[in-house]
Amino acid sequence: MPVPGPGYSITVRVEAPPSASAAGDLTGAAGRAGAVITAFDVVESHADRIVVDITANAHSVGHAEEITAALEELPGVNVRKVSDRTFLIHLGGKIEVASKVQLRNRDDLSRAYTPGVARISQAIAKNPADARRLTIKRNTVAVVTDGSAVLGLGNIGPSAALPVMEGKAALFKKFAGVDAWPICLDTQDTEEIIRTVQLIAPVYGGINLEDIAAPRCFEIEARLREMLDIPVFHDDQHGTAIVVVGALRNALRVVGKNLADCKIVVCGAGAAGSAIIRLLLQKGPGDILAVDVNGIVHPDRGDLDANLTWLAQNTNRHLVSGSVTDAMVDADVFIGVSAPNLFGADAVAAMAKDAIVFALANPDPEIDPLEAQQHAAVVATGRSDYPNQINNVLAFPGVFRGLLDAQARGITDTMLLAAADAIADVVDGDRLNASFIVPSVFDSAVAPAVAEAVARAAQP
Image (cartoon, rainbow, N blue to C red):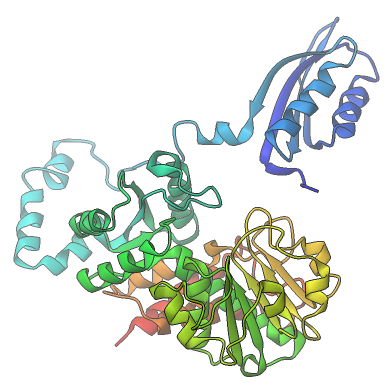
């Protein structure tokens, strides 16, 4: 059953009779409707009425309407206004540009702008590398999308993708002090995207590709990496892979298993799943089975594109075929980056002893985490309302902080693995347990640790 959460938080302003039971009546009605009340504030008090703001979490828009209706049914209660707190936080956007220098007088203006700025332009013209020292390129990342694979919403286009990219930029600033800007392109043509990013690259110290559908994302990233002298990082691929690999290292410590002995099932062979597999292969697992919508990937399947062909050549050493539940039999690890509600507890029961389940489909995972916990020793999801949240924000701010600090011109698997190890190492032995295999996204130690590890790995 869906759980009320802050993503559907509402504030309902109501008028009610000034009786001694008013507060209990209001909270009781909201509670019976399934609301999780987070605040109750009296904003006005009169002889004949009180005005109250009730803030509550719901699990959907429809549920929020049910809560409001339950309040309005109370005798003498009038609902004045309902505010959706998620929409309110997005009014006017979530980021802004601010000047780092004061412009108080003509002297300041003459140095920050004309005529003084001409000297800076001339210096960069003579030595283009100075752009990394004397402009925003030193600390700025472009967050680029075409809106073709946004969250779990699919192909919703560039305008609808903008709030997500704004959020990404806000996270860059919050967790690593990186200035990021959303670039939402009104094209889904591979060549146009590549050319556009190439043209805007002089402004930025790195490119973060985001929410671009597979398989186009693979070609876009690969070609931009060849063209540009700045790091190009597709977060849906490599950010996810970094956190998964780091979390799996700690999960295996909890259950006392070695990666080299493990059979791993990765469900979802798109951007995230492929990147997870590619990074895990660097660490020498026992075997990996890749599974997509058509079943286990193997060389004789007959429907393989370039990405699936590579996966078929580098996984599934015993050439197993079948469904995701077939793949899970005797598996030590399940990693899902696919679709909701694919299987139940029986499939987890068929896994090896002390199984690890990372059910990361969002917002609804491949299996209900409570069902998975019946048989798995360690369970992780992509959700914030369960333990062990696998969240890319553990990776990408620190990764780019390290890349920018090192003035890196590219990114390697060595850097990605260094980031994964840094995330894992934040959880020391005293804190490590089945419900705590990755640090909180608000742990202030994470981004600096990742940045230091990446910068160190970037050194020649």
